[in-house]
Structures are given as C-alpha cells and as structure tokens.
Length: 168
Image (tube, rainbow, N blue to C red; front, top):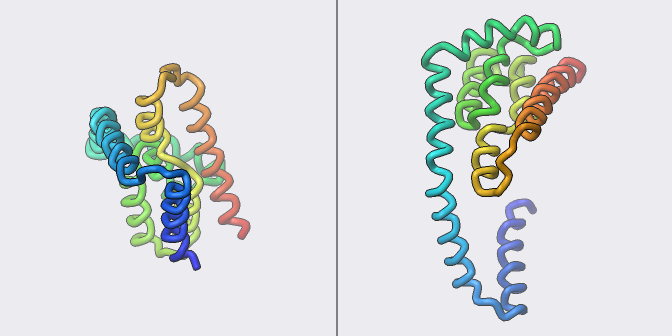
C-alpha cells in the first residue's frame, strides 16, 4: 500500500490543478527555477558546515571532545561509544550516518550501543545544517534562542533514547 502513496498524491495534485485550471507544467518549471536559485544562495553556507565538520574530524577535535564529555554522558546514561555521534549529529547528516555504520560494524546491529545510536539518529536533527538552510532564506537573523533550544532538545532526546533502549 505504501508504494502507492506517492503516485496517488501526484495524481491528486494533477487532478486538483486541472480542476482549478492551472498550468501545471509552467508552475513546475517556475518552482524548479526557484529551487536552483535557492541552491545557489545557500551553497556557501553548506560548504562552510561541511568543511568545518571535516576539519573537526581530521584534526582530532571530535575525539578530544568525546573523551572530555563522555564521563558526563555516562552519568546521564549515554554510552561513551555514541558520544561522537551526539557531537556530530547537529552538524552533519551524512557524517552521522557514516558514524552509525561504523557503530553497526564494530558492535553489531542489534547491540545496546547500536540501538541507542539508531534511536538517537531518528530522534535528533542536523541543527546547524537546518538553521543554515532555513534561516539563510528568512529575515530571522537572531538565532540566540533557536539553536540552543534545538541543541538542548537533541541532548534530551539522546538521554531518553538510551534510557528507552535500556528499558525495552
């Protein structure tokens, strides 16, 4: 059934546009043109995030931070093995998936650590990437509360994720 949802949705949109006498092709082309402009305008921000994440990993900063905060994370019930994932997740999605794959390879897909990492991935977001993409296109420039709240929510979700994996 789920494989039919997208085609049904597309057909519904086309039928609705036909009912409203809209030129769907022109609207599609206009939207695609807007997407190209969006990609061009946010590209420098995305490159900055990607380069900074690569530099953090190559320089060993993430490993040093992981070693520094892992005792605190252990007190909160978060295994040391997922500390680097929690640190990198707010910055990069693809880097986080690479770390998740490493965790699966090293500890097995059904281990407690892998389950914690999986739930953390599902319950957190790439905060800085999303802020970069969305806030670069809006008039909102004061991110004093948005980013710290999102980071705190990610930390709370990691704590609850590990607690749930331990209990279930």
